[in-house]
Length: 194
Image 1 (tube, rainbow, N blue to C red):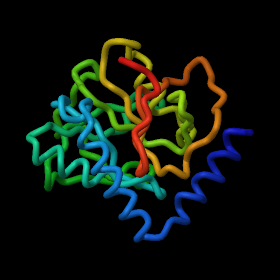
Image 2: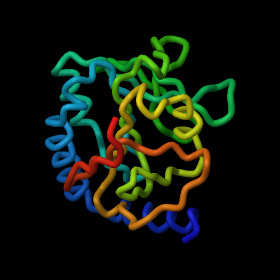
Image 3: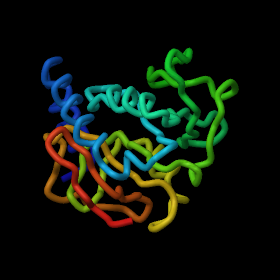
């Protein structure tokens, strides 16, 4: 199936979830993920703010703050094509909307952290399979940014999704970066051992 067709179909599916379904899924996701060893041992966590029907990690962020973890949000790099920096985010920080309308810290006023110093990156996605393959929004932001991540070293990569975003199999390209785990409202899927 064509990736653009998959994106359109799955985005419609997740946007069709009611507000109650979205809230319930986000709560179930947080309960599952916050008990996982990869979350408990992580001190520096990159996360995202939900957009376009993505499962909302707000409760995960709140749990991270409660456990004195440091959180980072993606910020679009203004100087390179379709890549991200991760800027520190504190409760109450002032955010501005990027070119896609997604709130992010101001790059010049927030502390950024090199990818190698993050412990855990929670990745948004449109679709996933049980092998850790993902389809994103199509801009290549995460694949380009995460390309330096080693198979054994570097942060643990965990995709967050509604269970309804699962596909049997996703065709991959050489530039696609696989995830270590996928966390949904129904289960945690271990795709690769790190």
